[in-house]
Image (cartoon, rainbow, N blue to C red):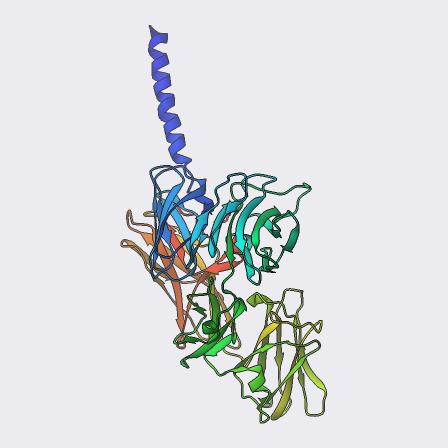
Amino acid sequence: MVLKLCIPLCVSCLCVLCDSVVRSSSAAPSVTYLSPAGARQGTTVEVSAGGTFDKWPIEVWVSGEGVTGTAGKEKGKLTFTVAEDARPGTYWVRVHDKTGASGLRPFVVGTFAEVAENEAGKPQAVELPAVVNGRLAKAGDVDGFAVTLRKGQTLVAAVEAHHTLRSPIDAVLQVVSPDGFVLAQGNDHAGLDPLVAFPVPADGTYVVRVFAFPATPDSGIRFTGSDASVYRLTLTTGGYADYAWPLAIERGKPGKVALVGWNIPNGARAVPVKPEDDGPILVTHPRVINPVPVAVEPHPCWLASDAMKESDGLAPPFTVSGRFEKAGQVDRFHIIGTKSRALAIRCESPSLGLVAAPVVAVIGSDGKSLARAEPRRPDDDADGQFIPPADGTYTVEVRDLYGAHGPRHAYRLTVRPPQPDFALTVAADRIGCAPEKPSDVVVTVARRDGFSMDVSLTVEGLPDGVTAEVVAAKGKPNPGKRTLRFTADGAYKPGPVRIVGTSAGLTRAATAALPDFGTTTTDLWLSPGAAPPTAKKKRR
């Protein structure tokens, strides 16, 4: 009898114990991919999310306005609804539950028709223009899409995979003739993502093929594929923009910019823009399939051809948009310098997705070189500083390191006095704060160009029941480190917060690195289950 009674008791205890272990070991959700990885304005799509979801359903948060997400009944299925007026471009998605939140994943909103790859085993017919949402599902996969083209057209095929979505692939594009010959191939255009612009030689049906190698090379000799190997393939014989020209416009001065690329219609060569705020704005046109950004600056902006005519000199700060249109070209600008007042010089091209390797030199009236800036590595911009030895006019020379030229060999040169400023960073994009257990977040304050003022910190978007205060430093304060203490007096609704610093009329939001995507975010996440940004050291 004792044995019979003990067995059910032990099993019951074991079940309770196991249930407790399972509940305590539930992990926060994670997302490794979204498929499809985007949608058109004004549509609703079902998306498969790869990752870990110990609990279901989960909740979905999307950055910006115009896109909403919800969890479906089936685990791993999400539904995204994109408003008609949603801004084209990349949004960021985070899923969360009571245990915590995932990292951010990109979701791209487009303006033209989107179709899904059908995995039919033969080239899938696609009506142009369109964006194909596909996936190289297994090793050895090659996806093919049949397009009907006419002689004289230019087909633009572009893959968005590793550069934006961080799919683990180094994709290759091919255009194949009706009788099976490879007529064009593209490898790396935007990072590892390829683009092909193919002049059509004759009427017919052509096949666009997509395959890939691992983004991180391994010892395998094969085409790669996996559930996470998602991509977006743009196919069009219409307008496809590479960049906007000029590369920068002055804030508060409405004007027009030209889209530069392939098959650009005349109407897109003078697109009206209203640069009312700092920061880039997206330039779109109804006959161009993709938007492109243009920078907005708080100072005068010039075209190189106009700037070179200013013989009296350009007064910093200013920005010049230039383009190397012939081999060995050197652009020369006269600038006004004041003795001992430093000038920061920055010439961008690779960071803009362009291919110039800019070299900048400052020449004195006697023809001697006084300063020089050039890329440190192949994909770097040129950064430098010049301190005028006397009041006067100096010459700035800009050239390509290799003497190369072409439509994509464009640059953006900015010359300005040092601007005292500051930046805030935190260690992680998720902040954990359990009820009755205060959590400390270290905010790093980076001061530059002589900025020395104190910075006041506030937190925007705090949920009800949560407070945040700056903790006084023990001992000698470190001006480069501030500590924010988050305290929750009970259960609260997790959500996004922003840490904001203000000083001397400047307002800056703290950023956290997104290492997987090579970018940062100001959208931090506060929840009881999120991992604290820094681990506390154990006492010995």
